[in-house]
Length: 193
Image 1 (tube, rainbow, N blue to C red):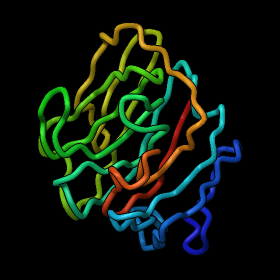
Image 2: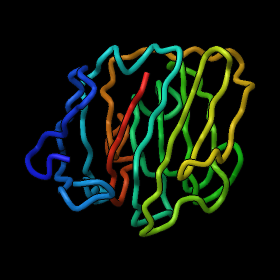
Image 3: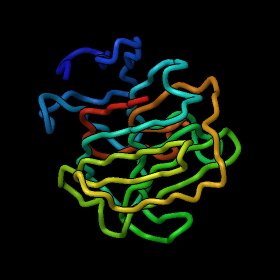
């Protein structure tokens, strides 16, 4: 909600401030100010912090308003792809389910991911959508909520334990930088442990 400058604040008290990189711009958001990502090279970089990995439970949420649904777009990630620690992203085509124009939340140990893909059609161009991913180690569960309603869930996760790594957390892109860049507005990113 800064509205100006090259830093995104952190209200958690954990010092997880982010640096705007590539030129995302401050615009009016769902609540206060949001960041507009161009889908080319814009992202926010939050340095590696133990408060964001190796957890027994995590919830990641954000308000998003996409400009494009024909490509994947990272909302908030710790790592990238199958080696990620956690990812919340707009999913063009689900790798497991084949569902299209949706959102996915995944948690991993650095080599294996457990994914929860949303139902088809949840991502809509020009519409504010609240996306929440929830994962718990015990009891095992992963859930995806869209606009406050549980969209999909699973209680069979094969004992996955969240890993740790040295990657930063990125908003609007993943650690590969430039591969899955979000095109649209992201507001009120929150990570709860």
